[in-house]
Length: 501
Image (tube, rainbow, N blue to C red; front, side, top):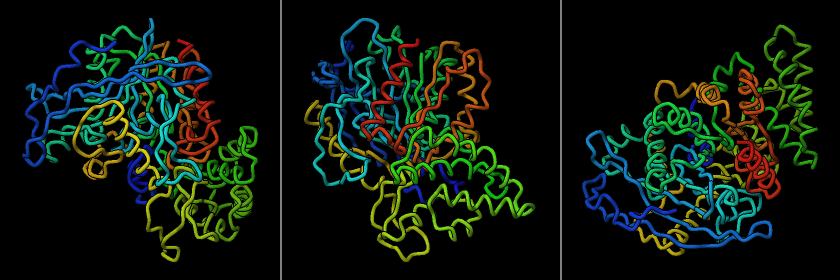
């Protein structure tokens, strides 16, 4: 059912969900690796020197004047040989004691464009919401939800995404970059190197990660704390892929079904115009109580099962025959076809109220990609290529990979990947009594349901102030920040986290 889920949790994002992530003086010098060789042995043109441009954005009536820098940092092996080049986009403003925030999306195989031009950067392009079309002009406009007013921002594209590239063959790249542990280590080192290059080691440091970037977050924070000697002041995890084990053993454990029922119910409430935290509270309580206990009873209590099926039908708005045949256990992809079957459409696992036509409505299973994922590649790619090459003037050749299917195919998990990052989250909070963590979810997200994080955080020890780790939910799906009100609420909550340190 969900056992191959990591790649469905891209969102920021990759393969189809149904198939189961003050400028340095030397910045004007040429790129370090002037004899780059590609994976096929062909000579690659060197990356250009870092490029800069000054821009402004008007947010809440205030004008932000900032510098954009697009450039690259080398990844070296133990012998000092450059094995990859990682591209970053940095937004910095003058000012004393400004913090710096590093941002990563997910996949594995996604660039950072979604957080950059969708969520928190100073410019924004429309994507990911109902009614957005991939053929709409990808016009950048000032982002009212940008975090630049209170922190500098550094967006990092992992190797194989964006313009970042491996300088070794696929076999070596898989070993060096495309697995759980090496991914954490080289990305942590890139952040370290950016801080040193730009003289920012004394700045307060923060991390934000979306989807598989949320999986990375606690692990990067713990590795930097204990191995590289760099401590984060705060971490924001947006729609994180935090605990994969929550989806395991769906034939016996109620947990996999508990994680998705509230999000399906939230989507139903939203379609009726009734979604609110107050409306969701009794649904969450029912899920954690009577629903879970009834699933555990199984056939030993037929009356409880019948009552549960009636309740699930009420909460989801689904056909009672479909709910009964499902045993009250609503599988995600089956739901996304069933809920819109009469309209000939499919819902997205990233936001089940975002739909597209089903090109194969009579097939026994979904045969097309996710409606939301399929719609976001074009606007984000075009907008980012124009921004980098025209606006900033970083004259790079080569393809921009908003979502790299190649990286996703080559990716492999290390032994502890299925354990998620909850253990590292506990350790980072224990290591630093001032560290604060905000875990942010959209109600409607079925790729990384909010209940996974709620259940995981509720099992954590308080470690002094229990509010240091908070889970908050907002209307919308995986990319709930595509909705103006949800984005504004997220920005307020994040600003409070930064102000608290």
